[in-house]
Image 1 (spheres, rainbow over the protein chains, first blue to last red):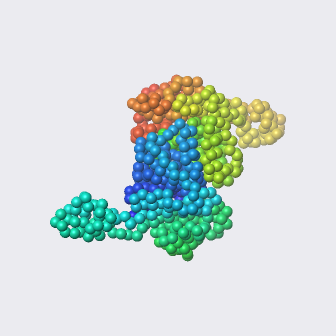
Image 2: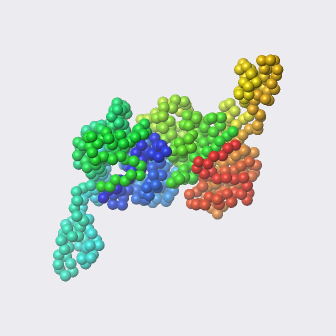
Image 3: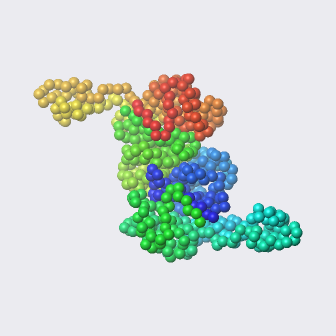
Length: 302
Length: 302
């Protein structure tokens, strides 16, 4: 299962009850923080996300509304005694600016900060551990920007330890069972592999497409996704603004969802000019019906 | 009158209902922002402070909990169409780091940003316009840090326009009355100056002493103040922590207030370890009785 929590989805600046872009994707007890607008740490607390479950932070691009919450979060982790390393993935330049912000205050972290600076204009795998991978989705925002495709692979069989133990199967067989072998009980009888590993499901996928101009090239990566987040800063009537500011409309996001044949679409990064966000749903539905809004503290599961 | 609104007073990091250090001092319709922790812009909205009334921002030192809200606020002002210049006073280095944060996102401001970088280890006047002056208060925090003494001078007479008009005094006399002249009615009779200008009061003063070790040298600037904010991160039982981290206890803040003979003391920057903040009041009261806590959204008037 993947669990996505929206921490913020407002474009440009926070308001009284809206925060700038930030999301948490939880897979296997790990929390991936996607973008980190100002106040993300407050939203993490509100949504009871354990700080220590965050090992990886992915920053799509270096506009302030997508990363101005990061320096404060790094210092908070330190003040709370964090020991485990923190991995930060983001555009080239992110390391220098974050380190400068710490140095200017004579501050530092007692835990290790690992930066992976991205500059590849093409899609690349930036994370591949156990059954989780993350691939970049090149976006079109006038500044170097990536979306991220999260994949929870199920090609690795997951052993149900309790079950194996209940059959009295010895630990020495576990590695073989994970690779597809059957289990052998102490009396010699055989337990079929399928009874000892979790059933094989298709991969689970979540595609995060933050700030971007409408561009069908995105579909190469988003094809067939379970869940697609695609920004929709504007409504159709402001399509010219969208083009000028390298953003998309709800209709354009729906087109990407339709052409990608995804299961579900969520829209976000709404301009603060719109009071009635249902208009985004309305505009999208005519093209792609299974659509929802990314609103603060909302949860989506895959 | 001066009106002080506490936007945040929590040390180190924000929590669910507490923000890091930030205050607004309003004098004559102008709002001075003192320090700017993460989320200060949310607190400005909550307290209905007009963004355009802020012309000057003063940063005491470059620890993150005192200025990580500044880059976001600068961009928000820009997005809201600000035209008037913004003056930022803070330690040397503040200009480079803020400009770097904007540049890395290819962002800029359509209004002018004026930086006044401070490096003087001695007290100096950094603002002196009309009847308001601001003087630095050198503090002792292991990193270059200033407090700020705000003075609203009353040597300038303020004309009571309504009153002058009710006597039928012509506008052409107003400039003279402001300089101390009497008014002359159309029938030639004289209205004493004192009846036309606001009564002369002594200067109003507010001293902001953010993060600092206990140091009696501060008293040189805080002597006789109407209102003193002095940090008290710790209680007496953690006096050793205070010393080690260049902070003060409630008792030490009270001692500064007593020796300065101020009218009122407010305590703030409480460590998140304390749940019961009344203990700060208790500890202070035995030394200096007129004391209050700087809590989010609280207002103090002078």
